[in-house]
Amino acid sequence: MLPKLLYSFALIAITLAANKPHIVFIVADDLGRNDVSFHGSDQIMTPNIDIIGYEGIIIEQYYTDAEGTASRSALFTGKYSMRLGMQGVSISVAEDRGVPVSERLLPSYLQELGYTTHLVGKWQLGNSREDYFPTKRGFDTFRGFVSGGIDYNNYYHVERVNDTEYFGLDFFNNLEPFEKEKGYLTDVLTNHAVQIIRDHDTSTPLYLHVAHAAPHVGGGSVNLQATEDSLEENIHIAHPARKLYAGMVTSLDRSIGRIVAALAEREMLDSTILIFISDNGAASTGDFKNYGSNYPLRGTKGTPWEGAVKSTAIVWQNSMIPQIWPGLFHVTDWLPTLVAAAGGNIIQEIDGINQWNALISDEIPKRTSALITIDDLNGWAAYRDGDFKLIIGDVDADKSDYYGELWTSLRKPPPSYERALLNSETAQVFREILDIYLDVDAAIRKRNELNSHMLQRRKLSSGICKPTNEKGCLFNITEDPFESQDLWLQAPEIVRYMVLRIRYYWSQLNPRRQPKFDHRSNPALREYVWLPWVKNNKTVSEELVQSPQFPLIVSVGELQYLVDYNLNMFSDKVSAYIKGLAATFMDNMSGLFLF
Image (cartoon, rainbow, N blue to C red; front, top):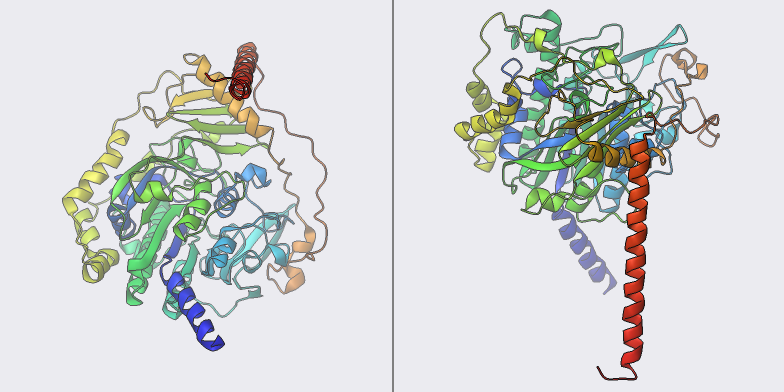
């Protein structure tokens, strides 16, 4: 009797697991908004990405954080990075720092729901201790690198630590250095992701997180690295560095086509949720300049401008109704949304919002506001509420302009976009396996809609707003996606409310420590491999830091608004209290008298 009962329980478990969708989550690194062709650019073709977007959901109001570690920590925890001390500049591979081990990450929740979990590619959430590594945080396996970027051909990471150059291998299989791999990094990561799909037991739901290095600059001595065949596809581009960047994006797009084909090969595609995002905008200027373009959006990676934080995001599942989704979606929303899609529920207090039902039905999107980013070391923050976006603090002027237009020159006509779409691997798989035939005219209409407001060249006043510690910038981001028309003086009530919201979050942040490089991290001490160098049980040596000063001088109007707000709240509470007393009195009297 007992074996029969156990068999029944096992059958139920397999049935429940079979009903859970597979989840394949693909992340690009520093991909410009203007560098996917469904946003309207004819310069770089991304047909595999575009097909998934056209046949799925394009999240047009998708906000992420301004830097890689901040964005990835928010994605995996469902919490604003400032609560974790992960805000601002990304973790250095030579720092003893990581996402606190007390935090539970997305793969751990999915493991609990029966998923097999794999990370392929970039981590950058801590590497100084083994407990920071992915396989200690909810991933069954890890094949990839832990730093911000590695050489695309030899997988070395080079880092300058206090005027000394440290260098070593940064490629791991779980916790062990992996030196057997050879080939171009994007292809190597794709090969492993495809192999995971081919080897997967389909009776168990799969969570495969593929975090590409592309098109981030290499972490070695050479910044931009592309394959010869990918450069051939971009021969029409005039600027030599831009052509290299385009080649890296081409390899990334091909990777997505190969992953789609592998899912189809295993008959998993029809039961898969496929997601593609970029962790933040392109690094169009600065030390890690990759010649990516966020144009005509303003700013570059590492700033609160739209070019850094309004990123690319698409979701596909065969049962979804294709659309350009109108709602506001923040990177913290992925954790509760995907857990809900997998049949679970988050009961812990987080900042992310479950938007699964809004994505798959006509339910109104739940998010109406978001703390976009806080950088307390540099002293700035950005907040979005409805149509409005507020930026306060002293933002680097050298990263606050419009970049990328100069790189759009062509030396010959670009390839046919329609032909690129129809000949892509994803289009072929969709046709042959799912009987989905791309409606080219509908796709072009979507493309034009996504690009329509961008085609209206921004009309700049005598000078665009640059926030300071005395005055911030307010934009109606729906009407002015270029952040060119400042409304700070015209809308004082909105300014006061939104400044107070940022003050509220600022009061809750976990202060960011100044990067502190540890000489014990030197790979030369461990056969030139970036291995952990601190024992797990050793206390993190973090000096006490004062709460950072809020980056805006308080105004009389803000104080008055706060007083009025509190008085109104007090009045409402008194009124509610009196009404409550009256109701109680009537209830008590009803026991004595009939009314």
